[in-house]
Image 1 (spheres, rainbow, N blue to C red):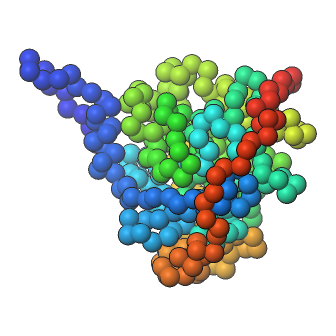
Image 2 (cartoon, rainbow, N blue to C red):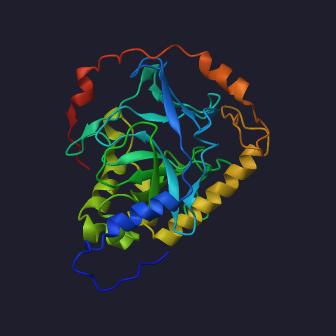
Length: 316
C-alpha cells in the first residue's frame, strides 16, 4: 500500500489522505455485522447480540475476524463503550454467543465514575476479537498473568461510536496496565476513516498531533477505580506507551492464546459457543437463534441515578 504523488491538473481536486484511507477501508476485510438489543438498557438483563451478513447470530469474541488488514496493522474493534459514556459495558465471556452486557458490582449495574476532568470514558473503548489474555501464562514483559479477557483497545479518533459498532482501527501503540495483579494490555489505535488517521502512524505521533492524549490516557486508567475504594492502578515500563510493532506482537501473541482456547474445552466461566469451525463448542444457526430468542424483548432504558453524573476529585 503506497501513495503516488503527481502534479495536479487545474480541473483536479486536491489529493486527500482521508480519501485514501477510505479507499483502503473499502479494500480491507470488512464483513458486515449488525446488532440487536434485548432487555432494558442500564439493567443487568440488557444484551447486545451480533449478526453476520447472512443474518446468522455470531459471537463478537470468537466469530468476528481479528484482522481487517493484517499487512497494514489494522484490526477490527468491537466497541463496547462509546466515548463520554459511563455504563461499563463489555463482551460477556460467560454467556453463550458472548453478547455485550453491563458489568455488575454487588448485584447492580456498574458505571464508571467521572474523575475530574474526565467525563466517563475519554475514547471509544472496546475489545479486539479473536484475542485472549491467558490467565495461565505469566507475561514475559509484566511478570503477571493475563486477565482472562480479549485484549482491550482505546480508539482515539473524533467520532463517537455506537455500542456494538465494528470499527476498523489502525494500531498505534500499547500500554501495559497492571489491574489487581493481572496483565491488562491497553492497545491504542485510531479509526482508519478519521481525518487525522494519515498523520498518526506510530505511538510517537500521538502527542505530536493530539498533545496530552497519552498523559490523559495514563491518568485515566490509574485513577478510575479510586472512587470505588480500589487502589491506584499501575503500569509496566513506568507507564510508557510502547510502539506499534510492540503492540502488534502482543496482539499476535494473544491471538495464539485464543486459538488454543477455542480448540479445547473452555475453562469455567468462559464459553466458546460460536460458528468458528475450529471451536470445540461450534454451534449451528438454529441453536444460536434459540439462545437469542430466550431473552426478553428490548424495552425503554432504565432511568440513570443522579450519582452517575457526579464529579470525583482525585489527589494522588
